[in-house]
Image (cartoon, rainbow, N blue to C red; front, side):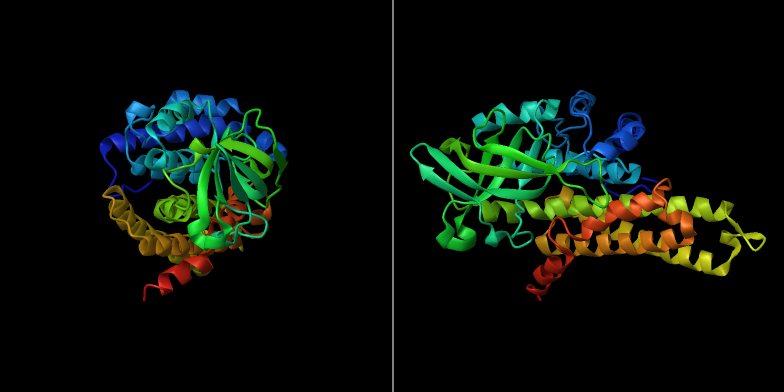
Length: 380
């Protein structure tokens, strides 16, 4: 980060530099190739594990680095700012912490070390074709049959869906109970009968991030793969973990904003119009002043939220505020910066065009911004 947030220690600053170097060396040189095919190389996950980039906030006894969510936030920021594509947020910052918090000791020791090494790539599957932010409306069913669950249904927009070896599947174990009938079941996908991956979805942006459909047809999973000791706790588990997920989205939005402002300042300094640089024109200066102000306010808000998260004091309402407001301002800033690039702003060879496309879904995933406002409004 070009600024030093109050929660960042000297060790974290060193970690940030190493993260930035990894993305610049291992992701960015291959971005064009991966963008065309829709997914990164699988061995990048092993490199990331060897580098210590995976599961930084998981205790060392389970193969992690023993850090905090601040380390995950740094990764989210640097990944966005680099314009790199890798599902580390879903794998390390989100899925791993579901397992840490709710899985049995045996399951933690079975899955987390391999996630830390990159041997296992993890996804969390909530969204369905007819149920996005409205999780209670999901249709995927898990029916108890002896010592197994029989699972039928489908999921879509699943980050890491192409590479995933492990999936945390949100499903209905009792469709008569609404939210209280939702459970999370862990699926080990290798050679799993009845499971199949659908197509890698073609998106407007984040093109090298493998986002896929998943299908389950009479998939049998051992009952002990239920996450948590009893059925019906899935919705509560999701609600407990979502505030942290929303902060990582806010951190990513901050990374996009910072890159957009930096790129645009550099561009308007060099671009000439009517015999002077764009930066010499009052409109350009005023627009950039507005963007810099929004970026500064966003930094301050996110900084405060991050301090709360590191102290385990971040409440769901504040996280919802951070998610919707920072992602919205991110899009506002990038749009203004693209306009200052003129026609070149619409060309994908310029970073601002990729920022424009990559940042847009932040207002949708992690719970749409409209849902965030509804959650906030319920507390008034």
